Amino acid sequence: MGRRAVVVVLDACGAGALPDAADYGDAGTNTLAHLAQATGGLELPALQALGLGSILPLEGVPPAPAPVLHGRLHPLGPGKDSTTGHWELMGVVAPAPAPTYPGGFPPEIVRAIERLAGRAVLGNRPSDGLAAIEGLGEQALADGALIVYTSQDSVLQIAAHEDAVPLAELYDVCARVRELMRGEHAVGRVIARPFAGDPAGGFARTPHRRDFALAPPSASHLDALQAAHVPVHAVGKVAQLFAGRGIDATHPGATNAEALAQTGELLERIDTGFVFTNLIETDQVYGHRKDVAGFHAALREIDAAVGTWLARLRDDDLLVLTADHGCDPLHPGTDHTREHAPLLARFAGHGGRRHDGPLADVGASVVRWLTGREAPGLPGTPFVP
Image 1: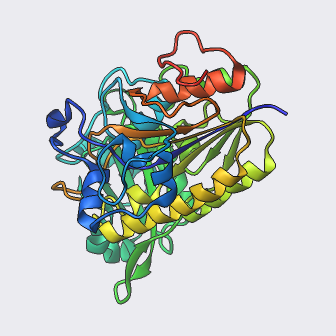
Image 2: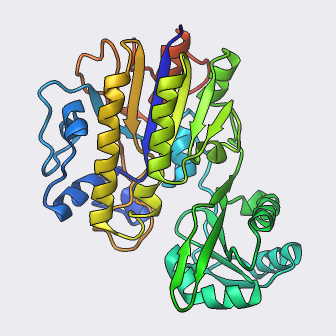
């Protein structure tokens, strides 16, 4: 029986502004601290016991008397989105900022999308996803058109009504747009955003989102694990963010409940290997909508699951809880925020010490834990023995 490692990304749960946050318009942001402030105190007993309140001051979450390894992590490169955050956790540093489109996409890009899709394009401006379908959903349903929008992040999002554009067609269009968006227009992700509903009852996203990310530009700690014949399991959108590179098996996680259940099932089923999980709803459902109560409820659901995992962990397991960026509910706007990621790592010999460092330390630690050696040429310093 070999060792196991589990890394769970609490999407958008930032732990304080990075030194260059002002360059992104994010000075003073702190997702977890401001969420705690807005709720009058977080109720997260399992995360509290692990040491969440030992990382930074959090209303309702005092420092733990016996924390696991804890601290804050920072990126080595630019960006504040899920792609760059997950890449950096596994030792991939983007060489330059990916392109963004605060004024919408150039006319030639829009015309190219219309040609390859054979459908009209609506929108083409920065927008919150819910606002996009609320404002243009009726026309998209009636005409079978595609709603194209973006944000402060490097994304091209395509929303389509499932009754007007079949899912298979939307995915095909997005895959072809992914190939279109190369070179100077190499956005981090093209995202399929199907929705349903009608004008009378309102429109809502369905759980059939799919991300079409760029392949990582360099080798990652996932590649090092595969080279060592360590099975890599991706839960949720992780496999999509890495364009499948370095992944052996994919498991669904369109909602937190599904991703949490899949992670728990893997802990019961696998004897060796790596589980890499993304919990999407703290970002997609609650962070961007500034739904403080919903965000807190999602964290409580995660906290309850973590409590059950701790009872199942073996002495030779590594469990890491972290994040990829922030989405501060008290910050103006609805986009991601440039923040540190919290770090909680439970493993034999953690010593309860503090560890601050690059996000890549997570991937380096997973490789060390599961293979007994380091991946040459990749960033990151293991925090495990």
